Length: 153
Image (cartoon, rainbow, N blue to C red; front, side, top):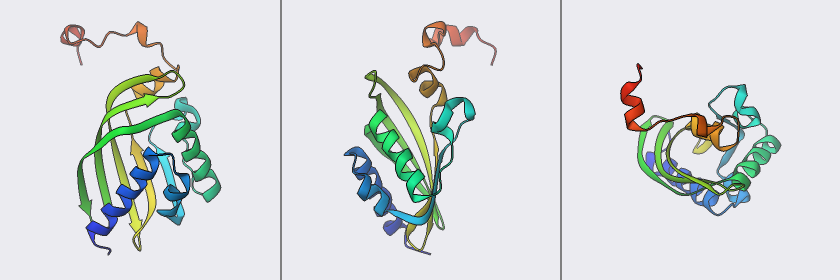
């Protein structure tokens, strides 16, 4: 098992490369058998499809960096269990095509093999994503505290 500090350094390198759209450095952090997916159902389209070849991973990462700016996200915490690290991030995300900005949180679950990232499963606010990319009309929903007080959850 690789030391936690080494694994966290690799995660930070991936995030830093992501912030400046450096796909080559992002790919350099990954095991050749790396797999990636954003948790969500098929209604999110290709965004929620798992990828597991260097070509499909690179293509997926390219689409994400072209459309989503995560440079204002910060690591809130990291939790390790052996070769798995779960990272909690919070901050402002920008959907580049519409310049929609929203404060949100993301949970990333990294699995490592021999010090390399072999799997990344990302948990995002799927309601925010669906509204932002136009799958749902956000204007039809009222999530204000006064509305939530009246809702039976």
